[in-house]
Image (tube, rainbow, N blue to C red; front, side, top):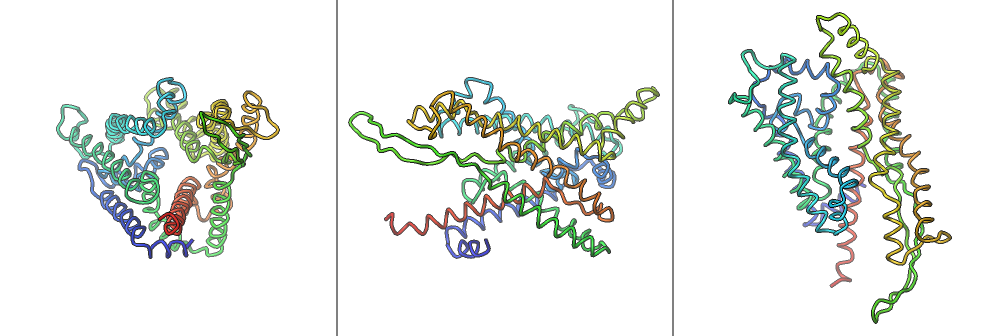
Length: 429
């Protein structure tokens, strides 16, 4: 890996792309420290320390949300818009037809996703301000009103910051290396490493630190192995005649990834799991005793304070959402139809419905491994806290580790592809 990085840095055009990405990421980290006025920093820090749901959102903004910065929303509105568009593409015929139009269709869907991100950013800005105002985090005398100039400026600042990050991500995709949105999320997570490293160093138990370091290395190795794992389905193409031209047949393979869903099932699971305890938390101080008792029970039983129940539900929801999201991203019927139209077939499997059933059966089997992998990654912090209770403050975040490793692996693959293209330039000319 390091040899590939050094080789890539010697190439002027690739070095220019790498420095471009680093420049954009520096701008992002600088913006994360530009605050939006109106919040009490001490109360804001305490609010995020006690709130697991907003702590998860703060993870993807690189701490910008807990600082109430202009990029506090991060790329969360764009991620939500992308998920909504992916789900709608599976059920809306017009979007399905647009998706089949190749590059033009993908560009149009991406354009719709960007348009949808703006109203979602406005709604999330107002919702975030409403939660902070209800929690007493805002400065004395603040009033949350759409007729108030302060509220309007805060919503505009947070929305503009999210749109700016979306634009910076597009610039990285066009002029840099890798996926820009993934890099923004990556930079946000890595931006929290210094504070985590400080807690790591300050821990007096060096034996536990050594165990944690070994576990981290093993987890990274497993993440790379599963992320790159795939089942290769052999595909054979018969010779065919189109017009006056004869197309020779050949053989290739259809790669089916073990983890098709990525990190999306974990985000779905934790959002749904934290919602009941989050809502119940607002009613724990209710004047109606039975309402307060029920709300307290929900918070204590289903919240992170009860790791056994919370971790078990987290694991089951992650496994379930992995199957759900895989069913949306990979459709065996469409794949079988495309193979039939292009004259391709799986050796030993008849085209049409038998091919569809075979692909569905293979996907269901390999998704078992992907679902169990994601479920284990989701509950990994609870496992670490149980094994090493003296390092409860030094959390081994499975979700953040999965995102970071996935982005690094994908970027290295693109760098190697760029180097391979340079190696063949002499033959192409």
